[in-house]
Image (cartoon, rainbow, N blue to C red; front, side, top):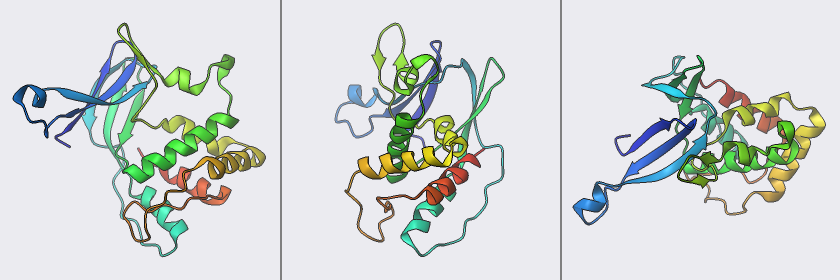
Length: 200
């Protein structure tokens, strides 16, 4: 995307900015709007377009439940990053419906998984530098989402219960490219997370 750029800075944060192409003045068009902020906890020193695996085609599904799962099957890594500690990471684009759904799942996970030393996930991932401190936005923590697969069955059910209770009831019309189901079961959430865990 020629409109969006990703960067990193020396306080171990990631950020994304977008061109202000629709602005009415030249001065405004030269400004970049911050659309994402996230504390990674690693010093990133390289970005590269690409992924670590070949893209595969997914099959079609007919039910609304499978539509959700197959929509995540379409997600592929398109940006790699490396850190000074030798960590390799991958970033992927999500559409609005996928992002909203994963954000709700992330919130539900935070109610079940407790941070080390009592530090909350939102505090750890908040963007901090010498000039400002902001809650994380525009990013999903893939490491946290994958932790769902390591939970005991009882805790998985709690996550799904929190998700189904808190998720918005505003669902796009049937056939919409952003259509998602408003409730989940443990089994289909496991499938979604397994699909996402294959992104390399």
